Length: 636
Image 1 (spheres, helix red, strand yellow):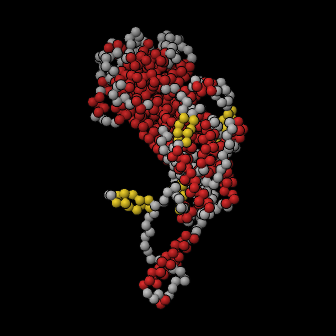
Image 2 (cartoon, one colour):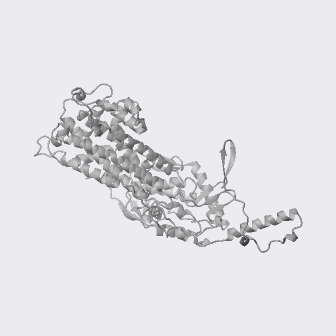
Image 3 (cartoon, helix red, strand yellow):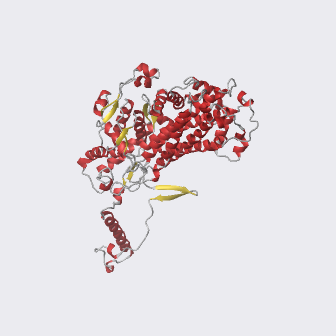
């Protein structure tokens, strides 16, 4: 039985070869999925070159001045108060990668690892990480050569970012650990877009990273100060996996709409529940879009032969699983759009700690036409305590005039400032450590690595998409139950000798129940780590992995319903449905024949699942929706 993940990999592999320019500002979810495909290349945008050079200059200036900044010349987490000697800064970064490469579990697929690397490169392009241009170029060369580290999928708690998975990613780039290895595609295979078909027959293996990089003439990354931390501090694992989940979810949502339309047609339902006026009075965008799609597919102008044969006579209204499809599928569509907006923001966000800025730390904003000072905050004036008064203050009798008084006040203020900066207490950092101001920029510690945004988004996605399978299984029940469909039980002739779709329905029910468990949000959990320094985390990695599994289960359930709806149509022949739905049935029949007697069922389920995951089903129906107002397929 082929996995839906494998089928998705075939879809990614079927895309045309491309070059994606990364600048840290404009990467889309669809582009990141494309970058997962073997053969897709990265080009570095001009803006990114200048941004990376400028931020590295700020780091180098700080080191030359022997200032202190977290993660550059200090330890990490609980060890952030330990200042590291200059001659050990490179070893500090190497140790960070090696010690943090503590992930476990099944490794990410090759394609997902490429997405992970591409996304980290895009974030480095923003110029807030402080890496050198040389290191960035080596990472891009490794990506373009097809070098991808073996990255275990478990071990991240989602703050400070996806540390363990990203450490494994960086470890391979250093020439340590393992990398995926397979023979490179030939030029003819690239030109014919047959890369995936060719690599299917080849043996994938894990080999020492140094050997793989040498075979591809790629030089390992040599980490400079700050660069180890820059490679692992971010939300790239949860965001990359969430991106795959949301792209697949948008595809299967359209497939669910067209499958519901076919089920409605073969169950002799009515399109009246999708009347535009109904949905105008409850103007949720997704609900209106789904209703428009159903109208376009079931009643595009003239009624079908099948509908004309019954005209819904003698019935009042359909069951909720048919009548309420726009309301249920619609919120799923809106959830997908919301999650996509969160993730696309995250794709082009800086999540490092500390962050490097090649600009002034002073911040102003225009309010009501006036320039207002925002940062740094103005100090509050207060009376100094007796303990803060210096012992060498001039006696009052020595202050002879106003000018000498002003000079003494200025001297005392400077003395107080100096002493407050020198005062250090265990567990607290001096401001010069958490905010370094240099000639060409500043370095400041923050918390953008926290994965709550993508974690919550992935949980929302899992909860939303689960409903597509839930309502699909209810329609499937109506198709296979003779009391509800008035068709042969389990959609097969010779019931008893043949079981038809009996266990296919059980499979769908099992997947729906599994999704109910997987839809429990991971991000409501948190656990303290790193000696209570990192005392709240997002669990975003788990949320993203669950979201992909939920979407994969939904793809299977929709495939089973579609098979059943096509089979139900066989019992209405020679009557025909609408042109669009007939095109869908013809596509399904090209992969799975009508069911006249029992045969191995999972082969048909896999075949139709591939039609969904490959995008072929959406491409087939798109022309029948593209000219129909409000279907939104032009965005897919």
